[in-house]
View 1 (cartoon, rainbow, N blue to C red):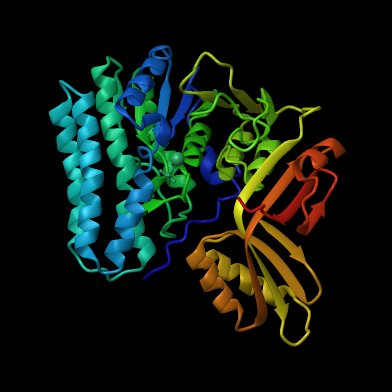
View 2 (cartoon, rainbow, N blue to C red; view 1 turned 180 degrees about the vertical axis):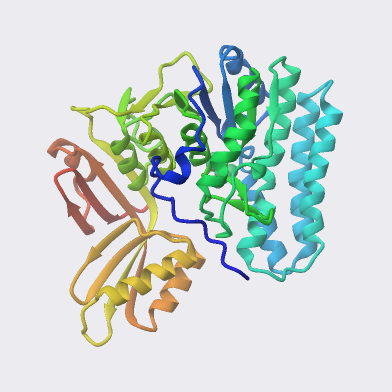
Length: 453
Ligand code: ASP
Ligand code: MG
């Protein structure tokens, strides 16, 4: 097949000559909202979205929505069953996804139900048609064709409901706008084409005073194959559209009151943070804080578009604002990642671990969709920690065993404290004995054996 990689505009250089002439002028008060899976997960929550939007309806708005609740996970299972040759199971699992969406639509909609049902059925057919075939291409291709249905179904339901609620909303299939290469499951955006479509298709609808509602996370190739941008990619889609429309701000509506200095489920005295800068958020996301998808920041930062994180349950709360600013006196930021596995690789012949081996290792990571959460280099050995995805880790360990002595230690926890002080170290990892400890001026990290419960 001919290569269709997009020209690498990944660095998000807004002054690229190919982009400049395609950009549209700034639209006053234009905002982008992103609603994640949890915010559209039930009849009540979709109604809540409409309530929130009532206060913004006199200004240009683009809304990006994810798949409802755990739909993406459910569709992943459909794709796996299909690819394993279990067609009946795949159809059965898909049937559950269908019924959930039809039920939500039925409870939510009155006048728009039939129109919505017709749209949902079109998407069902797209997937079922594929499920009746036998897989002949690579898994990642099928994954994207199936998993993209989650966003198409949720946005169809939400947009019909918004119209019923009197919000004049235009649903758009983002696959006509957001073009990517064919790097399925982690597609790269063709910025030139996408910018052109944003200016041609989205902008006039916003100018006419209608709300535009579209899907996050998905796109399409130049051959109209669906693609996805990587798990949790809707934040990224929303940031890309904010950039291309020169939005005044992007708001991500979440099921938390604001960004906190730790996960309140882990640390009961976690503190809300009112203001952060872009760098801090990229760092937090990198170390594993479940705040915002790390790719989200760059398109925003390039244009100084503030990112607001707000609670969809308590919209009156101020939330967190992330923008260009210098911030002093941040509290220690604590990120705890559980279920980590440590893999220690030692060269078999006592040779140094050089560029060649590292390059090979990173190629495997990319192929297996695993990313080290911690790296520690030695002369003849290297240590990685990963989220413990059993199957992938075993596969990685098996491949690595051809070249290295491999030692695998599961059941670990990785703790990162940014802006640490002695009190924080004492409080959060006082008595732990550790496997790896790393310390820089900003960060304190330990990989340790979690206490048995
Ligand atoms: N629905 C996709 C996922 O769950 C994308 C997103 O929610 O951001 O990964
Ligand atoms: Mg999500």
